[in-house]
Length: 240
Image (cartoon, rainbow, N blue to C red; front, side, top):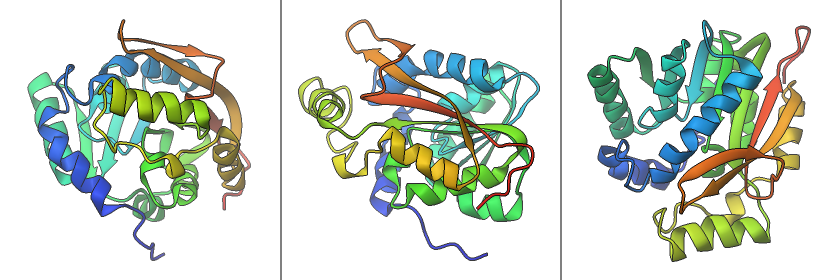
């Protein structure tokens, strides 16, 4: 199957330019460092990690991928940003954490290796691509029957605009300006519709609250800004 390019070159360039600072907990990726423990706990609770074959889509510099590997998963990370992948490989080597990193589009991997993973994660990536529904369909094809898909992204509403864009990027400056574009943010109903069309069943939907002053994150019931969604591929599913 021939896939059209489903990435924004400006987004790839932006993350590549910041790649050397990916593992700086006080740099522009500070929120990801602060969110990571809560994200890992959520994934482990809803999908399990120890002994799992896991694919991390949009792995960037490897923050989540390394965290899942440290919890006993066999992890493959894919991304299209070459400099970010270089940083991920070097950090894994320095840390002694085994993760396989590939520069590959998720759609092409789904064509080549369908139903090969127990768990597929795609966190903070869907809002950066032109066609997120196509990404979700590829995630569904990559997971084995009975396996899990976990996504996270940002809701699209007035509150998320005020907090995630105006507050985080322009007032508090904890993210670089232009990190997010309001029109690309994704409502939970949209994400779940794409997942359902791809043959996935929603098993959990939760908010991810972040306090930039205490630098703590926690899972909540409020999905109005950042949120996590867990899905399962039914044993008998026919995927789109």
